[in-house]
Length: 373
Image (cartoon, rainbow, N blue to C red):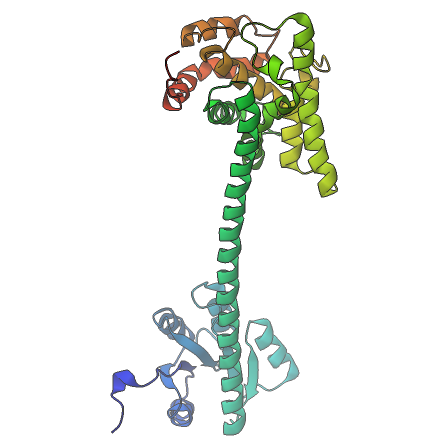
């Protein structure tokens, strides 16, 4: 019992373009057993048929036609993304070397001279259909690989972020920092960076990639606190001058920890560079009165200047063992006094332009109330 038409494998469709009826009849007869055929008698019609045939597999194209000749037709097919990958084979009586060169330069994959040799025609058509199928299969395979790489990369980035947050949370937890401090400071830093990216002073440094890397590295700002003695980190009340000098070492400890990672990797990268800058310099002040290096002005890395604003604001509105949580308005007033002394003036101005956004972030990522003491 013969298979129903819908059960038969679909045959490749070939477009025959020739202005001579005898040539069309000959080609159609030769190809009918293995291929479906469509016909056009001029270049403009060929373009219309090709555009309307999404499964078109190959074009057999004459050169000498009225109006748009074969070379022009081929160039038009190759210029259209919808038809650019369809193989074009010229079938023509023009058999000079320069004619063949012109056809191949127009984008054809092959050039056959008339009169047609059926065995050569069959072989060339089969070869180019096989090559196209292989090329498409390779492209699909490459796309699958690219999707897989993107998925794996996304998974690795999520794992990286989780590890960063876990390590940073260990250091913050020893210090009694609020649980969501890390997330809030990330959101603050991103908001500041996005607001400043159009500023002439910062535009060159605040690309999309740099902003995301700064945000990801922000949780490591106090990683050095993991090396500070417990009795200083957990002290109820303010530190005395000697204890504060020990506490200040956390900036250097944080830098050294990240430098250890850089040495292990055999060099740095942008993410580790921002992490090192933030860990080491976010306690520096614009007027040079900060620590650990007494850097001032533009000598303080931009990532650290952004982090300074984010970190101080969150510290002010959060409860600490040595102080109560200030209101948003109180925090604004305190920070305003630090313009040009503690903070980069332009960064602080951006903060005040965004103060409602900072308040929203603080509410949205507020810590859960702790147990009653």
